[in-house]
Image (cartoon, rainbow, N blue to C red; front, side, top):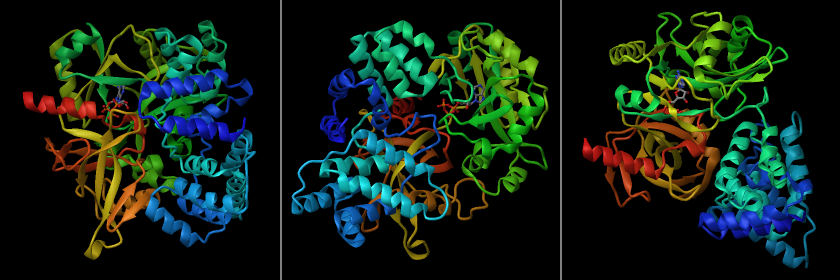
Amino acid sequence: MLYSKLAELYENLGNTTKRLEKIEILSKFLEYLSEKDKDILYLLNGEIYPTYDERKIGISNQLVIKAISKASGNSPDKVVQEWKKIGDLGKVAEKLINTKKQSTLFLKSHLTTDKVIENLRKLPELEGEGTIEKKLILITELLISASPIEALYIVRTLLGDLRIGIQESTIRESLAKAFFNSDKESSKIIQEAIDHSNDLAKVFLISKKGKISEFDKIGLEVGKPIKAMLAQKVKNIEEGFKAVGKPCAIEYKYDGFRLIIHKKDSKIKLFTRKLENVTKQFPEAVEYIQKYVRGESFILDSEAIGYNKKTKEYTPFQAISQRIRRKYNIEKIREELPIEINVFDILYYNGKSLIKEPFEKRTQLIRKIIKETPYKIVSSKQIITDDLNKAEEFYKKALKDNQEGIMMKNLSTAYQPGNRVGHMLKVKPSEKDLDLVITGAEYGTGKRSGWLSSFILSCMGKEEQEFLEIGRVGTGIKEKDEQEGVSFNELNDLLKPLIIKEQGKDVKIKPKIIVAVTYQEIQESPNYSSGWALRFPRITSLRPDKHLSEIASLQEIEKEVKGQKSN
Ligand code: ATP
C-alpha cells in the first residue's frame, strides 16, 4: 500500500477527538485492508512488531533532528530552532520538507508502507560500530522519499508518539465493527484474542475471516508474554467475602513486582506486566526456577519481593524497583538487592493450558510442583477459609510481615489475561496513593540550575491518550543515588530525552515516566487541566513495570474525591 494512504488515515483519525468517529473511520480502513498488508496493524499501534516483541524502534530526538536536517537541507540548528517554536518534530519535518519539495518541484511520493516497515525494522537490529550513522541513513532515506505529510508521520512513528488518539481498544472496536457488525460478544472475543496473543496483525487476520469460531485457534503460547490478570479493590474483608463468596482463598498481597515466568525446552523467560522481557535482569530467578520448580513447560504468575540480606526482613517495592531497569552490573545489584519469588498462579503446565481450570485446582498444582525454598522461590502464603476472624488474623500477619495486605480469590474461577476481575480482590489499609505520569517539569535555580527539579503530574483524561494535569511535585525525590527510592539524578536522566518543548524554565515532557505519588488530599483547582490538585504530593517510587494505560484516570480521581467527602 502507498504510505500516503496510511498518512491520510492518520490525518483523518487525528482530526476528530470523538471515539465513535475514530472507530467509524478505522473500521472502514480495516475492512478494505488486504491480508498482505497486515503489518500495518502494528504501525497503527505505533509499533513495528507484535506488542510482545522486544524489538522496538527506540530512536532519540537528536537522531531525528539530524535526519530532518539531512533530508531537508537545513542545518541542525535551524531544525532545533523550529522545534523550539513548534514543539513537535513531526510538524518540523512536515514544514521543512515542504519547502524543499516545492523548490525541487517534487510532485508525488511513491513511498510504500512495506518500505517504511522494512527500514524501521532494520533500526533495532543495528549494533556496534557505525550504528548511529547507519540508522541516520535509513531514516534519511525515508524522509527524502516522503511527502511533507508522510514525513510528519514517519517522524512521529520514529519517536513513538503518533498523536492520533488510537489505543488498542479503538483497534479492537474497529475490528468488531468491520468484521462482526459491532456485535458485543465479538468485541469481547477479539479482546481475549489480543490479550492472549498480543499480536494485532494475527488478530486482524482471524477477524477478517468473519467467523467467531476461528478465534479458538488462538491459544496460549509458552515463551510469548501474556497480559496479567488484574485485581479489583474492596474496602474490607467482609466486602471481599460478599464479592468472591465463601469459602475463598486468601493470600498475602506482596509488596513487590509482578513476574510472569515461562519455561519451554529448558529455557526460562521472565516478563513484567508490561510484557517486557526482564530475564537478563534476574539471573538468580532463572536459577531458582530451574532448580526448584518441577515441569517440562509452564507459565507461572508471581510477585518478586525484596529482602534485606542481613536481617532477612522483607523490604518495600521501591527498594528493588531499580532492578527492573538495571541492565549492567547485574551481579553486584543481585547481591545487594536479593529477591524472593512468590508464585500465586499457574496458567499452563506440560503442554496444557490451565486458564479455564478453577483457581483451586491451579493453586493446588503450584504447591505440588514447587520445592518451597524461602528467600528463593515459594508458593504464596495462603489460607482457604470462610471465617472472618481467621481472615482478619491473616491480614494482620501479612501487614506485620511488611506486605501490603491480602488478596481474596474465588476458588472456582478461570484466569482471565488482561482483565481487572471481580473474583480476585485486594484489601489493603486505605492509603492515598496514585500512579501518575510526568508531563512537564521546571528547571531549578541555584545549586539546581540546569536540573529539572519540580515535576508536573498528570492523570488519564476522558478521551484516549489525553493527559490532564493534577499537580506539581518536588518532594519525595532523593538527593543521592544510593538512597532508597528515586533520585533527582535518575529522574533527570529519564526525563531529559523526553523533552518535547522548552519555554523559559518550563518544559513539556512526553508522557512516559510513571511515578507512584502519595498525597494528603485532592482539592478543586482552576490551575490544572483536570480541575483538581493534589495537596502535598510526594513521589514514593518509579513504576517502570506499569503501562501508560494503567495510570489513574480522571474518573478514579473523581471517585476518590467523593470518598473524601463521605469520610
Ligand atoms: P493493579 O495491579 O491492581 O493495577 P498496582 O500495581 O498498584 O495495581 P495493587 O493495586 O497494589 O497493585 O495490587 C495488585 C497487584 O498485587 C498485582 O498486580 C500483583 O502484582 C500484586 N500481588 C501481590 N501479591 C499477590 C497475590 N497473592 N496474588 C495476586 N497478585 C498479587
